[in-house]
Image 1 (cartoon, one colour):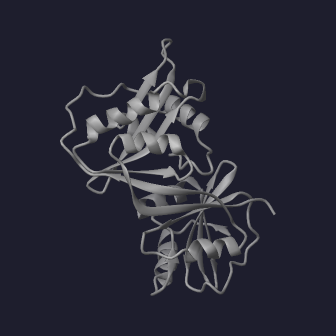
Image 2: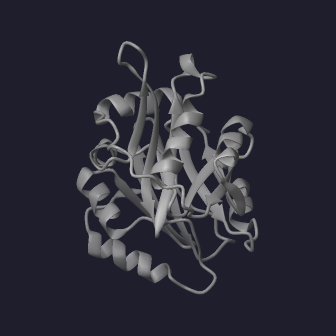
Amino acid sequence: MRQVVDYPALSAAISACMRPGMLTNCTLSGEELRREMAAGTLYAHPWAGGLLLFRRREGFWRMYYYINDPGCPPDLPWPSQVVTEIVRRPRDTAAAADLWQAWGFVRESTRIRMQRPGSETGEALPPPEAVDAEEAMDLLQRCFDPRTGCLPDLEELAANCAGGRVLTRRDEGGRLIALLRAAPYRKGWELRHLAADPGHRGEGLAGSLAAEFTRRFGEKGSVVWVREDYAAPRHIYEKNGFCPDGWTAAVLIRKDD
């Protein structure tokens, strides 16, 4: 595994993998790859069966793959705490998830995608309260496992806050205790995170934020990914018009050997 320092060479290596039957989970844009490269956090490992990409994070690695030969397992000394996610459409087989589990990864969870069609419920509401990105990040880190919670970097979160895509709730002392983060998705929206401080769960904060999201953005279609075994958030989304659409995602972790 080596650090990526030459974007044209990386682009050529990815292009070389683009063959019929290739398996991949990589949706990173060229801009995202360049940003990771500039930050010194992008690594690659080519092998006879394909190409692996790694984004270094604090305490773990997020992995993306291009596989041309499923019969040829990767030949590298694995770093500790590698996380990957494999999305399946309703018509797809479980081949990639089964393959990575055979290669030493363990399924940590399964997510399902829920979708809400656009409606006439969108309202012209006052702009959301301004929120500091570092304050929002602190709450997200208290509520989600950084390995599997798909947390944004601070730059992305700051853009969300500045763009009015972070809805908030505060306690009487002004402390941020709940938030909802949204992002543009195709011709609509994706609800990325719905977080309530552990000490304030059960107070209806998540439900009120989901309802506000529907009022603000409901004129366009929207999607959200939620853990299959998390009944409470699924109920909140169902209450606000979201239904499972058949897409699933397996979250896999390779822990220390």
